[in-house]
Structure formats: structure tokens, C-alpha cells
Image 1 (cartoon, chains in turn cyan, blue):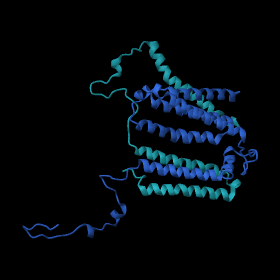
Image 2 (tube, each protein chain N blue to C red; image 1 turned 120 degrees about the vertical axis):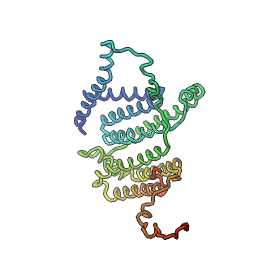
Image 3 (cartoon, rainbow over the protein chains, first blue to last red; image 1 turned 45 degrees about the vertical axis):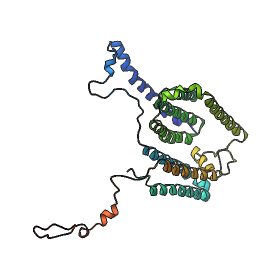
Image 4 (tube, helix red, strand yellow; image 1 turned 120 degrees about the horizontal axis):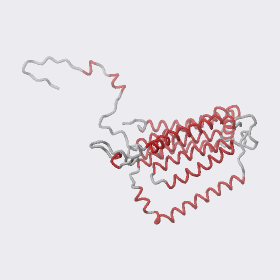
Length: 123
Length: 206
């Protein structure tokens, strides 16, 4: 394969890195040079009845999101397996086709189970 | 030249972000470093020619598995500072698990040395198909020679799905009830309403 095809992506990566670094560090540098850099604890604390500016990024949420994510991974993988199957059907022929149909049937059984159990319902 | 630079860039970043995943104090930051490690791993795979695996790494691992990790980190109500306090106590166990992982890595490299996998025709014995893309080579092998492994992967996915449903699904006991659309549509005015003419001073029997 030809790695030169990925050169534009690499260039984009470099530009993105440069730009994001610029956006982060340029204001900081300008603030320091122009004398606006004057940190104070009160600047970062909440004003009267405002929200706390900083808190733990972890916050508990419902376990049902996890179930949705697991189901998403399973069907994501199913879709990912379909790509090599689709382009190599001329090489694998009928055995390959039947294999994929059995695989799809297995996951369809899982989907039917999830549906029957009500796992696809939110409430 | 560019390849070598890209390799050293990706390799350095994957090692650095891997180390930062371990040493980051905040578990959410750990997951974010892990995502960076996945991206750089994808870059390395691209450099060795495993295009399909590289994109699968981004789509499946970054897109789904890392999000799942984030969910797990978010859902656990654990005081991580307290957890870290037991570092010395859990040190032997940690070393044991690290040794097991190291043994697996060594065995994996050994197995690779013993009989290298050849991408290629459906029997897997030939060299990579000339002029075919990486994804076609993988497809030819996966749905040809390693057909039963692929089917067992399907069974494993099914078991994972059923297991997740059994473990986390709590049933539909909603106070608001369920909407039965068929029943709503089948409802007729004649069944739903009754016309009564009560006498004056008399009540209505319900």
C-alpha cells in the first residue's frame, strides 16, 4: 500500500496540533506579557448563589446508559465485520456468504432477546 | 524520512500517554490519556500497513470502548484518593497481575515467531494478494480460513449482549406506564363514551 495517500492527514494533524496549541498558549502568553495575569482565589470561587466553578468531573448517572453503550458496541462490531466481508466476497464465495449470514443470525437472536426484554425501551 | 519521523512521533506519544494513563490522579484524565494512546496506536498500525485495523481501532476503541470506560469511571462511586491509599497493601497483587500480563505478552510474541500469520488467499498459506487492499486480504482470511473463529466471535458477542442485559436491565416498572399504540388506535368512540340522561335530582351510576 501507498503511505503517501495518508500524507494529507498527517499534514492536517500537524496543522491541528499547531492551531490548538496556539489557541491555548497564545492568550496565556499575551496575558502574562501585558500584565493582565493577576490570579486571585476569589476570581475562581462562586459569586453569591452561583455555581461552583470547579468540581469533580465525575458525576454518577444511570446504569441504563451503560446497557445502551454495550449494545452499541456489539452492533458497531457487527457493522465493522461487514466491511471486509463485503469487499472480499469474490474471494470467499458461498462459504463466506453463509458464514456472515450465520453471524448476522446470531446477533439478530441477541437483538430479538434485547427487544423482548425491553432493553431497548428507555422508560 | 517522513515515515521515520511519524513513527518516532507516534511511538513516543503512545508510550507517554500510556504512562500518563497510569499515573494520572484523576480517573477521567486517565481515560482521556488512554484515548490519546489509542489514536497514536492507530497511527502506528497505519505505518505498518494494517489500515483496516487502524481505522477499527479508532471507530471501535475510541468511539465505543473508551466511552464505555468513561461510563464505568463515572458510575463507580468510589473515593479514588482512598483507593490509592492502599498502594503498599495491594502492591504484591499488582506485581502478580503485571507478571501475568508480561507472561501473556511474551507468549504472544513467541506464538507470532512460531507460525507467522500470512494474509492472503482463503487458505491463509500464501503471501498477501498483490494489488489487493489490506481490507480485502483480511476479509479473504477471516471468512475463509478463520471462519469458525469468526463464528465463535459472534457467539461471544451474543453472550456479552445477553450478559449486559441480564446484569443491568431492571425491567420496565414505570410509574407512567407504557404506551400501547395498537390499543390506542383500536379504540372506538362508541366504546369509550356513554350518553346518559339522568333525571333531575338523581345521580349517575358509574
